[in-house]
Image (cartoon, rainbow, N blue to C red; front, side, top):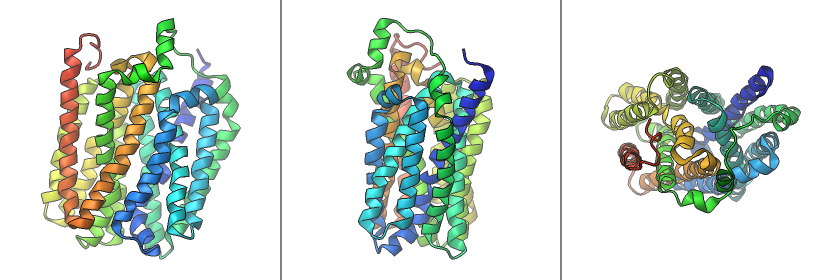
Length: 402
């Protein structure tokens, strides 16, 4: 066991790692109208930028377990944070649209590696309460990023200034990770011993992908993260360009969405020790389509803005609880690879689902966004219910739905 101070230090660094993940992740939703006007691009071009980030993210997160085992968490944090910092500098200075798309690849590589590594580490060593709070830290970053970009825009500055400010913040975090590499590498928390058979399975991609439950969770993460990202990426454009909401109100509404998601994860962190995860997940997944329906059909602008914020609260515990349950659902030996696959799937969903929504908005109108959001929320709920039925039938995994 680690000394208490060392354990506390690693936990604190994990919190900072999640904040650093969230800071640059969602500013694109607020910055995109300004970016596309700068480069004279249609709204559907958002898909290209999301795709390049997804490609880098998929590449590094899919190999997250392998990379972490060879570099250690400390070096992984340092290298990933450096890559994200450089990508933000690149966004701020990009002279042409193709450069923006290329820089997205670097941003994805950095974000994917750190996301897979730190999530696998957290699922293995921290309780569901702590995992909720770690993802709440991501929400703090995700809330601060769009809010910062909104303040930059409403004060008449270029979106490039917003990216430059974030690059400065991430540079400070990179320095912090550089100063603590040895702490991560020298004091890694020891996992419970596993059998030789389990150790062999840990490094086998094929055996992990052969599990039907792994594929079920991959599908779940694609659509869940797509739901989460669609709100962040398309709500601002829908509110300002279709509903006539001011830049300030729309920007702060998107910020409120991420803030409520963050607050929800803090609250559910306390609740998760007292209520079965499956019950929390089912309640959240039932509430999500209701909130999405109010966004779509609410009518009055204030009802719509409130529903967007409440949607963030409704879905808050879903991602961290599913990550925390992964070792029980697929087995501890396979959890590292499985979480890497899930994080990769989340990246795919975060890019593909809102990108498809952008295509619909371009071909139909931005008014197609709310019903699309509702449909995705229903699909996520259905996937969860179907996978739960499969788990109940699988007597080999009795802990999966506990």
